[in-house]
Image (cartoon, rainbow over all chains, first blue to last red; front, side, top):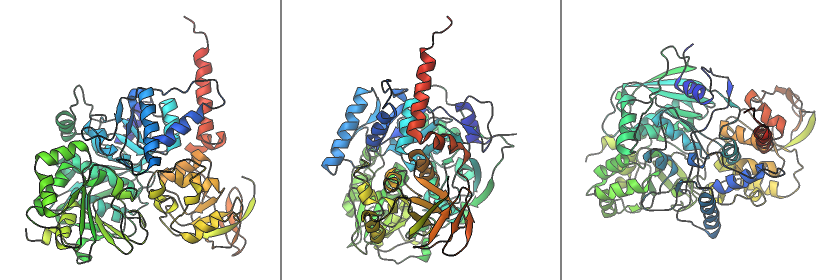
Length: 430
Length: 176
């Protein structure tokens, strides 16, 4: 019986010739990533060795990556102290894939991992963050785990008792219309699947529209696969994956391309033609409350947020710059832009985008997670409405349960920022 | 599980995210001693109930489908564990379910559960019996992959056992 991509990856990582959905395996981990919650991972890691005579020892420091992104620079003494503890732990344990708060190598973990070449097709990646699914964009099996599970990975080098997930295959055909983005595709899909439609399952992406999609767009769709409940989203590695890894991540040496067998067994197959796809928007307060933008156009907005691990890459900033160039952010609207990494920030600076943003009245922030989950900057006032390219709109997500968050593409967000109301970018004169 | 009786202290709907269970703005707090006070911080009634100290351990929160969706933050589980709450939901999001097993939070998958605040529920191995409305509902077993961790008493204990086994194995004299 043929295997899906994830079945192939899990078979290899577990030392088996084949596995099938439902099998229980213990895959070896290639990259174990955590951010500020490493403080809790460290506590739990030492807890494992309590009441033993064994010295706590990380199985392989070169496979651990710690990246500060959730509250950067620290917003409170408590966070600063946690970061200090983690920084000291990383130094003491020779964790070289450590990305501190810096303007050169810093950034959001889900962008720092791929752009530094830490992710390869076929790898098993775990992260103490639900959006670790992003790394499926490079053909890796990448999924989110809790801090205690990460402590166990640090000790053993494997994830214990993993049930091989079944797979939903999504075939994407057609050509995106101008100003319709990969974000619109994934929002549309989440609307169809619902927030629990892919729970405990993999979403495997195929089709000509995926072949043509840049790694950046693939990162967006894999990132948000978790919003349909998926264990991971995955794009089987192809020429674009190799191009990205060689040209943008500086990877040398052999790059394995793992593709599913032609007779692989899928739980469900979904076909999407993007030719007629219109800009989509997720309305408050669930990510699967998805509608075409035109159905909610005209709603007044107070804050526009562009950036995050979902949509803070250079092509997201490019489309934003294209729309906003020479225009002004509407009076009464705050527009916040935060690139996904320091590297992208510097690229945007070199391309002149940052200057266009500030000239238009937007505020460009450093790379980090802050505004997306209401833990740092960009909180909303009572009754305010935000339009954001981030990934969640749960009640209170942006720090205030009395506010509302809509989710959309960078094109929709940029067009709306100029108008001050929710606007369909495909209907806007530029 | 032996048969237990407990009351429903609160009823929640579908898609209760970890942002609702433990809002992001409290995520800088990680120590188990400090986190419980922020459980359901934005649902004032439930939060004050939990903090009132009048909620006996084993009390039940009932929810719809996809409980614990969203972020992998473990505080969402550890705070409920601190109050010794039992969560009965129609189903759970994967990471939340896994974190619950790892930390020993008692969760019950009960796909057809119907219960309201104040109802008395009897929980057996196979079903939940609502003594108030007289109906009984089947329990779906936990994914079998998690059983070894449940049996060990949580993931810390399970991993400790594995680390100890490895040491014993490594310290054995080898043939050559």
